[in-house]
Image (cartoon, rainbow, N blue to C red; front, side, top):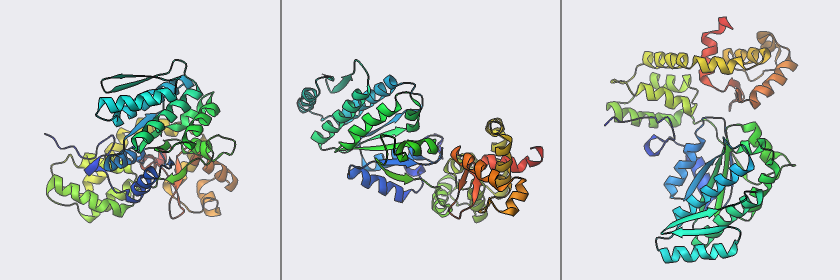
Length: 374
């Protein structure tokens, strides 16, 4: 059997790296029946983090992916199916006890029908509405309260709610349920930080300041040291050298998706990778992704491409300085406006040292390599 390292999907158990403080924070929030907005760029490991917390604490939980919802009815059906699945996770093994709890809930919610087939629960909503959403979530909390079992609903790609025609009504119904929740904890996350922030920080929106804000940063290089060393010893009975480790974390900028992507390829080799292997493997990978990189780069305006190129070549903590303006061949006012747009689009981020960088290290590398062509 082939041992698979650095999975493409959700990272689990031995393949999950660090995030100790974040895991502790989320675990305590769930036990305290509190709620979180998890803000991070795409592919920072939000889904893996939530899954790891649920697994290591044995919390019943479910993730609801809202990426493809087109209307309120689809949102209601997704929540209905998810609530049913989650309650089924928590149903007592005794059919008699389970039916007693379900019958009690059915009596409290005459508009929602329950049927038990053995140990299976089904919730039927005939006319989906924002009120149905609130009722479904409250039913789950009533069940969790009676069972005295904390559970979790994680809404992924939650910013999609803001794109729907009925967004305020849906958000209001969710707030109604969340505010009354006793045993259900909610985690809201998404890949568009700007839209997600609008939903929870705009005073005119129903979900304004409903949850604790948790920002997910990149894992520090030092945290990867023991993680990569252990996996190298598992693979080759020998750790990687310091220069190889430094190049892996430097070339990927500790972006978790790209650390996994690069190492997955390196760990396929029969021997411990050398420095040249890291450089060649990364270069080959980025070139393989050139179609997607060029497509992303090409959808930017000329001004946005100019600034992104300048930051790929020279990250700066003073983007409005005369020196950077001269180098980028742009005015300070244009840089300020364009920089804000690129940050909203998740093309640029500001690191802990205050430097503005291209967020995606593959795009930054591609720009530097092909700069003369732009």
